[in-house]
Image (tube, rainbow over all chains, first blue to last red; front, side, top):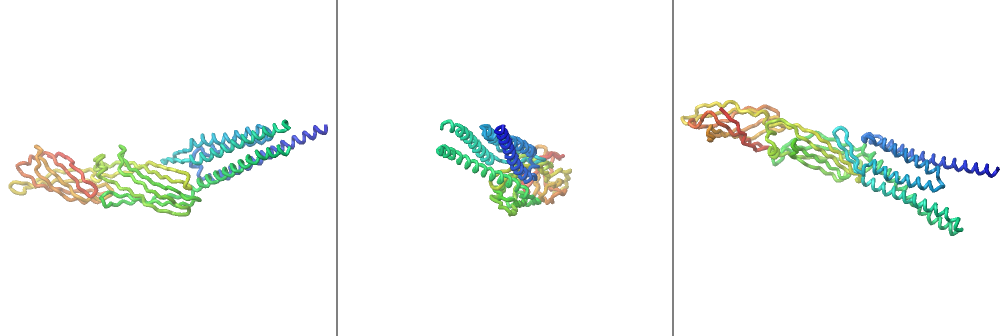
Length: 149
Length: 269
């Protein structure tokens, strides 16, 4: 009975710990977004739909952070990490339309060539994906180790 | 057991390093990109009053002063201003680019974007530019590299009024006066409005033909028509009385500092 109570307390502590970590990560991520978004406010008005695109990205990414943290210590954590990396790559490619962003307001057509930014971001996303896969392999490796001894 | 821990560390250290490096580059990339785009708001591009003058080769020279103030965090690279003037049929009247390799941060650069319009070339496209006011299309493209890395291009289509230098050109009634026993003096009144943005100086040559298409006389008159003003004058010709049938046609040739054009054929009588 005492052991069960201890186990319950440990479990509760673990969940609290995970929720706390998820909250901290989300707050840091949202604060970063908030600072950048404030910085870009004068410019973002020039690009219709920019704010909305970024907000959708932030919402999905925060959801993946929360999900990843809540299942930390399991293989699913690495699945969510990989999903995050893939989401970043695919969302950037789709929202930046292959790197050439064009828009027009009044009589002026504006073309922004973000291909270099997209290439670097994609490479970093792939590095993140590789890291997640290595973490997953390492996780399975660690799980498998005790049975060998 | 110690061996297992070593194996775990062998995997964990590169993964952690990979994570640190990725995070570092993400922060660098986002900070750089955000600050480069943010710098745009501190960049000022001002177009001055366009100046018109005559180039040494008698072409119309447009000069547009452009001031670029780069108060952003980074240099601006490959600043290029291109202007293309064309008519409604797509005929390119004038085309020129002005390039500035680098505008350093905190610097203010003033450039002069020059363009020459060859009226002779314009008349090859359509002679109506001499007589009718119309509009020319201007395609203006400004391109640059933000922080010398991110290419940006803005383009705009505008229209520019073209004011004809010989608007409402007309011949009046020809008056004849006796000159001698064999010839008479024909005075051909001419009138037009110089709506153009340049003064028209040069000469008008008139060749007079009778009803049998026989050249019966020719005369030359100088023209000095200031911009945006009406002009009236007359060209005097000496024609043989016997060959003058009182009707026929005249051919008019224009030789000015901006263009040489002719003949304009107008019937008389």
